Image: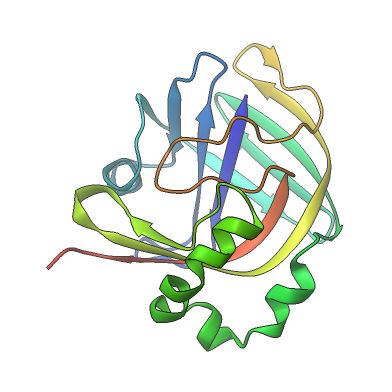
Length: 183
């Protein structure tokens, strides 16, 4: 089971949490809090199933808790991940600028296999990921549907929701996502 949690503090839709789950059978499921967010996210990324219902997350210094009808997840957050210091060297306005993210994409994808900072999203959109911080995930516990999630394991194989995956070592990242419509 591979899980990507998005806790959006700011977006055109306000703050929200969504969850992308890639099940052991490779089915990709989106858990979204409402129809508007479900529509936007599922038109940007690839899913086999979309489930709409309450999704809530609480992010503290050392813990992330996610709750929905299908998922209960408790994640322990540790110290800086290996590239965190390098990420913090880049000034914020540059770290999230699409021109910068296009430029560094070839380097980023070599430093962290499967990761991209620039790519094509659904419906002809361009998407950019500007990562500012990265912290280690040191523990996890919970359930998805009726199954125990077990502990922290490498993210392998890579997730297949969009043009990029996430680092193989589970991490909590602070990222600014920019999506530019075609035209």
